Image (tube, rainbow, N blue to C red; front, side, top):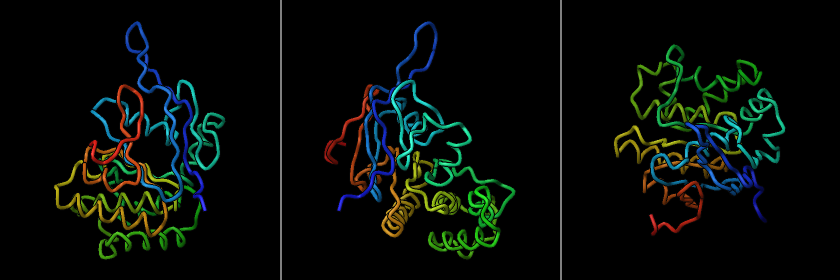
Length: 232
């Protein structure tokens, strides 16, 4: 049985106006992500990887072409509607954790569910479950400043997964960590992917992270092409 497509883009183009002429950053990008699939996007700095991730997550709109999340075209939605769709179907992990410093780990992970309108008890229960899944059940009440870099990133991963999204978009999720902590995070992301069957699209310079993906895509000259692990 073929897994359903949770995220796709068709003929995606993005231009930015810099000086007298527009700069075309993305050129006719087509891709599909199926449920539970792990996709890595590699490429040189400045090649457009983060721009693509922002379009896939509805944080920005394309110059032409479209993105569909859970079968819905983001171009046809208002900013508020895109926000609601993100809350239900897309999780984000960044190189820097972006946790709210004044809130505990439990409160940070609960936040997306509270924004959705879930009760405090439901939000707390699901946040506790995810923090336990990432090995932080003993750090629920600690604030980000009281956690190590690896622990903060694990909290960020739990926050991305707590809504049970269709897909998680990760931008250099291990780029700010030492090699040992990075490997721990990689192993944990792999385990969570298998456990919850959530898709991951990861922008990375990490060879170890890229080769763990089912599909490796390389961004070059604004275009995306699939490559074999040996071509990295």
